Image (cartoon, rainbow, N blue to C red; front, side):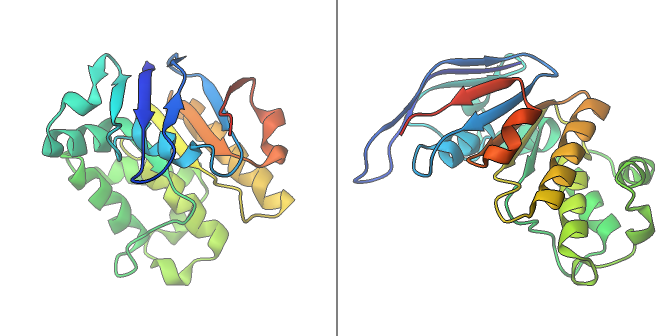
Length: 210
């Protein structure tokens, strides 16, 4: 499903980040672990199609993603990869429903309000469908960010430090939602973190040194 092969990246004037080969099967749930500076976010951006590595290859469902031209890569990412960032990054002028519909449009998919209702209902957020982000709590915005990540039924769901600023109760809730949504949508899940509270939830781990 996902293959990372001989990937290396270097930011200007900094030490090279080199990543061991990594293979992930469809439906598996992985934890990407490493201290600050070990390259977790860099690797997450590389496998999400957001940062082209200096060397190496990333394959998703047998597609070498960096062989795609920019517009095709954007469309591929929208259709096959769901991303949950540390911050929700919702469009403040749009309602919850509109934020999800625009994610479908950006991926080149037809707008499907039935799918929006299905996803929001699974996250107990359908009653907030007409709300704007500023009317939501931080926890509710995080749920909508997860809804946006899974709206297009991605093969790969990635979350970068989703619990870094959360207390224990909210950490458990977010992890449970990510795992539940990955299973509901048959998506492979990769969570990057240095949060030790997360480890017990995952059997597969990819550890970065540094």
